[in-house]
Image (tube, rainbow, N blue to C red):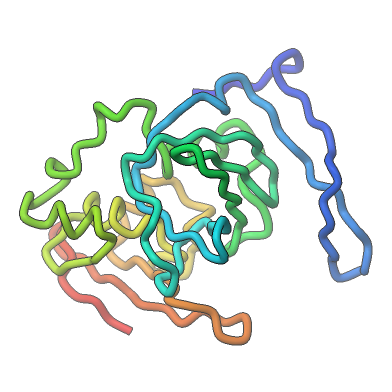
Length: 209
């Protein structure tokens, strides 16, 4: 768990061009906490857009090219953009469902737990559910019969869950407690086209529009 103290926490600003409604340019606030930049392993697949751009929830129009289990390290954590180094390649993650990423220590811990594991030894895809579906998890292809843990590794955190709560505002445990996960396929005129995944008895029962 990352702990924040007046000695261990510092913020500074870097040039970041963000035009907000008022027309002003607002600088990004960058956070440093001891240990945030250590090497970890992805617990979910990621789907980059335009080469290096990631979102807090994957859009399926983008190919599944960053695989679960990959070595990853956060090189910069800011409210509006997180820089990641995954298997030696640089990526940028931006929030979609909320204005900013969590900025308090508990929220940052929750973010890390949603996307990363501290050791690859804890990541055994074949142990997350029916072993015959493990390859589909790695490929990012959802299948009816997957456990919640399998679908989570397969698709990453959802855009929303049942009831309309956004995925970025939820912990991994809160997501796993829900029986409806909503993911975006693509964005048309700023509105995402979504697909809902319905669970029953801990298994994926149905995939709907």
